[in-house]
Image (cartoon, rainbow, N blue to C red; front, top):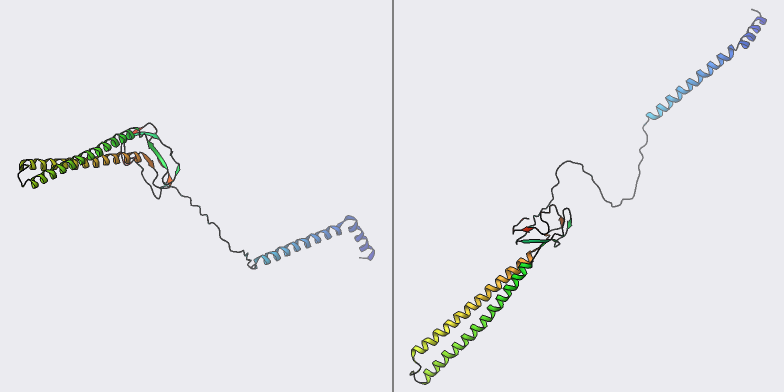
Length: 232
């Protein structure tokens, strides 16, 4: 083929854009090859072990909070059933259900009108018993003086008077008054004990919390009549 023919063919290919299409295909081929090489390079780099990194901080004290999730029934570590030892009518109930209380805090209070009236009655009985003791003590002193006088007269008279019967009567009278004095002292002790019981009941009419805690159940209301029992 002559040189003129080859030149004519090149001009024809250039006119038709055949060389440009081949050139573009080569560029795309190189771009794809480059992308594959880059992807392989990154894959190789990612496969290498990375150096371990450490983060350091200054040690400090703090609260450790641990949350536990579970299903069940909650029970208190310490449970005390608070009751009442005297009967009466509930006057006030300051503590309500689920209220937080402390040791000595008033939970409920009874109406003490009847108990206070009984305490006054017992105080009067105690005062009367003490007065009776003074009276019997004076009678004993009088009987002792009477017996001592009769003995002195008998001694001075050389045993002639008074008669033995009079001396026995005076001695018996002294013994009787001494017995009355002992009985009066016993009455004082009895009246004092009765008064102490009423005063104790008055003090127990105020129910106080024995521990720090939470009220789990409220079983009484103001105006309700309750009987003495350990748990109420």
